[in-house]
Amino acid sequence: MNNNPPTDSATKAEIDGYDRIIMGIDPGTNVMGYGLLGIRGKKPELIVMGVIKLSRFETHYLRLRRIYERVLQLVEQYLPDELAIEAPFFGKNVQSMLKLGRAQGVAMAAALARDVPITEYPPLSIKQSVTGNGQASKEQVANMLKRLLSIPESSMPELPDATDALAAALAHFYETGKPQIAKGPKSWADFLRQNPDRIVRR
Image (tube, rainbow, N blue to C red; front, side):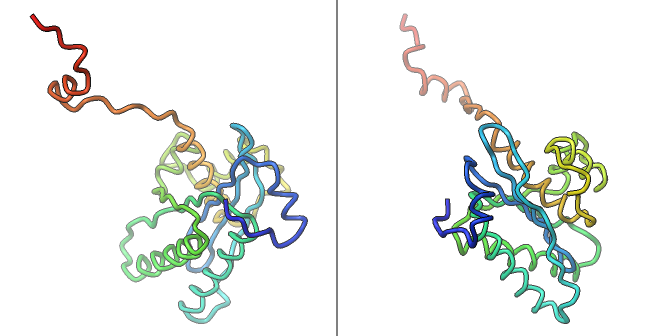
């Protein structure tokens, strides 16, 4: 974990006692969502979620700077061990895709500046992991998060970007919690090389 101290005592109290902290990000050029999960044993708990509003910045470059500064601030404040970020989906508007890719890249650079490892997840796999349906709506994702993490209605955000980001963090928790299955031999020859004691000489 990053060893920089939290920025205030309230944050220190929020992040103490967790085995690890996962940060999720839903990239955007108008609104970027973020969410942080604390993992205690095998149980994920909501630490915080919110959005970075970017529409007030006049140019795309100013928005990119704001993304970098705010993500870096969040990383230094909550000290996540890992970052899960939603991968941009391929759309018809090439310019929008380029801008979204830049926003994602800047957010990743902010995490990498503090040595936070990153994993990307396609939107479909995040929805599948959280709801069991890769075609789930944003509302369905938010409702499932509310149930799974016992989030009170009063704490649910107005904008779905925050819950989308939290969903990325939860999908990463589920993915990294899967037992590792040992890879078997690719061929009979590989099996014999790996298991010479299983060969019976006649």
